[in-house]
Image 1 (cartoon, one colour):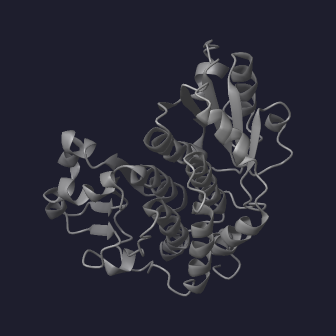
Image 2 (cartoon, rainbow, N blue to C red):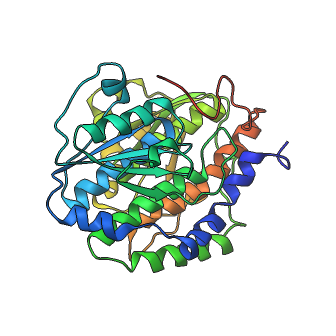
Length: 342
C-alpha cells in the first residue's frame, strides 16, 4: 500500500514543491503590501474551512504580530445562512481554499466585496470562480493536489502568508531563507520522524502549543482525526490549564509542540506539571533533550520558518503512522475532496 500511496507521495514532494516555488513565484506581493501599508486597511478578516482554516489561524497570528492589524475569523455561515451585512470598507478579507470550488467560499467572496472589502484569494486553482472579481489572487503553487487529505497545499499556503507578511515589513530576505530551507529539506529527506515511536492503541489525547504553534496544532489535530481516527484535541498551553487538564491520565496521549517564538518558548513552562500525569508524553521541539525523534532544526534568522520544517516532517509521519494502524490514508472514510456545506 505504501508504494502506491498518493498522499504519501504528495507529502514527500513538499521540499521540491517549496524549491520550485522560489524559482517560479509570480505573485503580486507588492500591490498587497502597498495596500496594507497605506493605512486604508484597519483590520483583517479570514474566511476558510478545514485545513485552510488552520492556515487562516496561522495568518491571523502573523498579521496581528507583525502588521499590527487586528484579525479575526468569520464563519462562512454568518454570510451564507444568516445573511448578515457589515461595513467592510476598511477591511481586507483573506479567503483561503485549496480547490477554490466550495460554494460557500465563492458566495462569501462575492458578498464581502459587495460590502466594500478588498479581497485576497489564496488558492491552488487558477480556474476558481472566486478569481474572476477578487481584488487580489495569490497562487499557492502547490501543483495539483489529488489526495483527499491536504498536505502540500497547507504547507505552501503558510509559506505564501509568511512571504507576504515579511515583504510588508520590508524583510524581503525572507525569500532567500525559504530557498535555503528548501535546499536543506531536500538533502534531509532521508531523515524522517519514526512512525513506530508512539502508542497506536490509544485513540485520544491533546496536542498543546501556543503562538503560531497553536495553528499548527489545529492542523495536526485535524490530520489525526482525518487519517488515523484519533481524537487528539488542540489546546493553547494557557487554556488547557483552565479545565481540560482534568482529563489527562496515564493512558492519555499528550503531544507538546514548542516553537521558538516568544509564545512558543513558554509552552514547556505552562505544562511542566501536567506532563507528569501521563506516560504517553511526546515532545515536538528543537531541543533534543526532550525527544530526539520529533526534533526539528531551528532557524536562527527567522524562527517562523520552523513551522515549514515541522509540517514537512509531520505529514509523511502521520501518513506512515496511519499505515501502522492498518488504515488507508488515501481513502479516509466519509470524506471527499471538495466538501459542500452550503
